[in-house]
Picture (tube, rainbow, N blue to C red):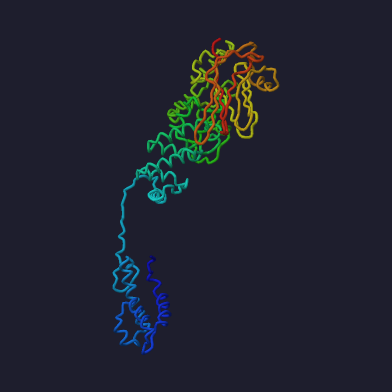
Length: 459
């Protein structure tokens, strides 16, 4: 049965007035009207005998008054008294409650905290990426574990050169290993090809940089390229007003202009940076021009440079044997291919101790790739500039090489890794001995970071 809404009272009374006009009786009702009068009195709870004595007093106004009183009684009985006026008592207003929290975390903002509180009544409250750090901090304080992990997932999938510093520091602050590990893996791949080309390189914490430089998964185009990135990082730490990436020539000129009485790393300013530069594989820098720049910039201690030059001299004397290198994982010479969307084939020529190699990647279809290296003759056209630049040419028919090829790609926030494992092989000048094992890659991830690491063992 539908309840009568008191708000509709005026409209109902008009309807009743119209209806009761049909019930209004003459001064002397006839017998045919007695039944109708009896029904009306019963419906309105009016005494029938009284109505018979005074039928002329049964007017619409009386009926409306009686109906209004009945309507109010019904409303009270059905709990709708808050909508009525007069004698019906209104419910008291709800009291406001104030909760005071002492929060010392500077990451927490009013907007971020409000967003976190929405999580109490909205399971998937929208989070603006500009507020993500504040929401993470708020979730940590409020112990909203589900919201905290949601923020972690968003931050891991949204790593960029501009955000990696804050994400890493947040991971350290809240002891969230997922965040710190994600930052390390992302920077291992992107330090050289991406972050090293932007002013955001300055913001990379030294602790994080040190971890990445020690990693065997670090991607670089060459050892000298990695050195230039690290020199740039130092330059940006010392020149805070610089807001654009300087050229390598500018960085080189800065260090050359420093006092010549001692190397940069021997000075007080450079002492704390020595652990970073010990991670570099300076023995992998073999070009004469690059070695000359190392000496001229007066950055490294003289003893470091003497050791590098001496190792190169002994390797050349012994036909390329790297007697000073034993561990492929920690000491191998590294080269890399950054295989992006537009490539179908991509290759690079490298030369070391008179031996020439091509490292190459090929795209077969949308998800299929292959990577390999092969030994080349110095007479090949592509190597003419390398020969004139490097000088030495080895005439050995075979070269024993220990190598590994790796490829990594990011798919749905997770790194896929493909690798050949460590392989020992004698490289000749004719097929099939001139070609390495082929690393086959199946992935939807792009770009692909392909690394070629090798040493020349004693043969």
